[in-house]
Structures are given as structure tokens and as C-alpha cells.
Length: 334
Image (cartoon, rainbow, N blue to C red):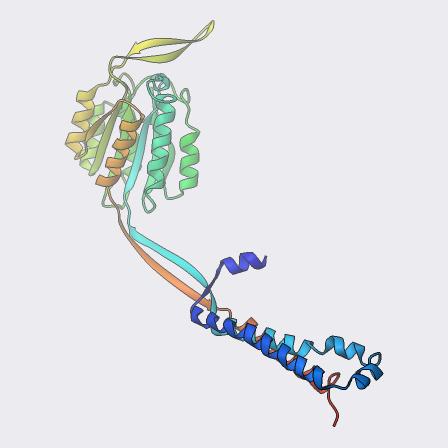
């Protein structure tokens, strides 16, 4: 307990610790004075009162011990022990961001480690941690779309919802238009000056009730910037397929509508990226994080609390004990 307390103590005047060099000198001086006093006492007198005064002889060093303890406490008090409390006040103008994540069956392809879905979730989680002042929401889509988490600053809730996402939660397919439209709707009434959607998919639009171009025009009309990410390697990728006999791995061709994704990103003021592995996906999110910087002001405050009073009080107590012993039990009579 004492060690934990000491770990949080700072001394504003540590130079006073040099006074501890006087302590050995005081001990040497006291021992020398005691030897001289004993030499001047007659042997017969010592022998005569040995039994009567033995308990006094035992406590006779106590006043000097108390005085040394008092001096040590005074030195520590002069060094001004303090506790330090660091506080940071973070303020700024954040950005409202919606993550639109494709959760279709093809997102289980294993051209990423361990698969596209888990890689996308892990990188998105790191991206969320890097945006302390932004409101972020989560929309998932496959054959239909769904708002998994509305715009929030609660990182714990958002990441919990993100990591609970699994393929099969929605009807299978790739409804890019519906996913984008749902994300835009989340930002429609946002008071933020900057509204951003990061849409990640690994396929072509083949479902949903809203055409991707219609969703794009809606995004443009309310000033939403869309960054699009095509996720998948070149050529073929291993995909787990559920069959009556169990799960089989099949190699399926990677088909990403890069023309559509590029058009959506370009016309809304964003960019299109192609992620072919885990490292490139992380680099894409890092670049988007760099491009969409929030204006953040961090005010640091450091408060100190003085902790010298207990040492000053202890020094006074030790001096009082020394005086009490000298005036009572060890009092010398003429």
C-alpha cells in the first residue's frame, strides 16, 4: 500500500534530500558524546544502581531516535511531496461517418486472413478507435440493408455491434444501392458539416429495391462524400460453400463492379480503392483517416496536491515525544 502511494508522489524540491547526509554525522556525534559521558561515571556508582536504573538505560536512546525521526520527516516535508493529476479536455468539430459493410456469403472468401468478413471488421474496429470526436454508425447489407448501429460516440457499443456482425443475418445477395441509400438516410438530418460514408463490398449489385445510381444522386444532393472499397484478390478466391455433405471449399471468380464503385466515389467527392489483402485494406482505412481529419483541440491540465502536512505533523509528534521523555522519565535532578 505504501509502495503504491509512493508511486504517485512527486517532489518539487528534491535538492533538500541532500540534508540526509547530516544524519550519519548526528549519529556519530551522539555516540561519541555517550561514550564520553559513560567514561566520566564512577564504576562504583554504576554498579550500585545497575538494577534500579536498568530500564532507564534501555529507554535512554529513545529521545535521540525521536529527534532523528523528526529531522527526517522535516527534510521530506521540505522536499514538498505532491500528488499530480493530469487531465485532458478534448474538444473539436467531428465528422459523421457511416460504415456500410457488405455481409453477403462471398465475404467469407479466404483470400484475406482469416476471411474477408473478419478482416474488414478488424480494420474497421481500428479505424473507430482512431476517431475519438466523430459520430460513427454502422449499416450492413447483402440482399437487403439494415442499420446495425445509428450514429454514436459510444465506441464500446459500436464495436460490440460491429464484431457481432455475421454473414447470414440478412437475405443473401449484394444490394449496393440499398446499402448506400440506408447509409445516406442515417446522415440526412445530421448537423455536421462533414458527412462521410465508407462503403465496402466484394461484388456486383444484384439485388435490393434501390438502384445504386439513385442512391448516389441522393448522396450528392445532401452533401455526403462516399469512399468505396472493392475487397478481393485478382482472379479466383477460395469460398466455403454449405452442402448437404458439409462445408466444401470452392474457387470462385472475384467479380467487383469497379466502374460503378469508382463512379459513386468520384461524383460524391470521395475515392475508390481496391483492397487485395489485409495490409492493403489497413492502408486504405489509414489513408481515409488521414484525408478526413477532424478538428481537435486538446487542453492539458496538471493539478498538484501538497502532501507535506503528514510529514510535518509526524515531525512535531516525534519532537513532542522527545520532550516528554526528557521532562518525565529521563528527567535529571540536580
